[in-house]
Length: 183
Image 1 (tube, rainbow, N blue to C red):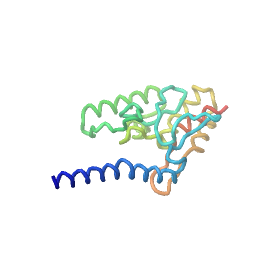
Image 2 (image 1 turned 30 degrees about the horizontal axis):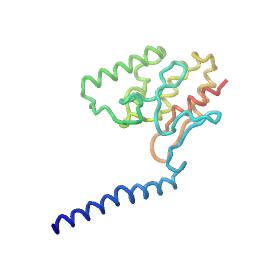
Image 3 (image 1 turned 90 degrees about the vertical axis):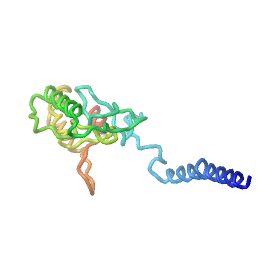
Image 4 (image 1 turned 60 degrees about the horizontal axis):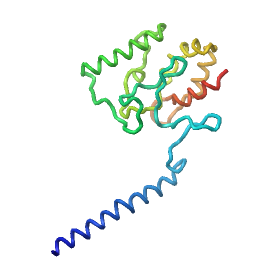
């Protein structure tokens, strides 16, 4: 009976600690973060169009395409494919993505395609692509939207984010939102 009472006290203690105190502490810390932990949104004309740190699916030819997603951009369950570079299915999928890019961008050579345009990120929700990944799409976008290529290229270059550590990136949602404003 003594052990049962000790176990009951431990259960109540851990329940209070992990179901009440810990969530309140995390909530309190989130209030110090930008946007109070609600995520950094991107708005166009006062309307939220998406989240800055979650990739979205763009597959229309008049928009910049982002990285492929192993979870079809489902933010409820981020994940990678867990297939390695020697997996035949994975290699076939990457080749299919390369073939699609070459079909839609006939002016490209296979060596022009950056790896981030044909491989999914570990989370499957990467919102960014490399500047090279955006620049290879400029000709297609300009043609589809009947815009001057130099204007579209300048837009891409204005959206390149440089980090203190790590590679330069371009946020695809921000780029496409700005593209919609371009005339």
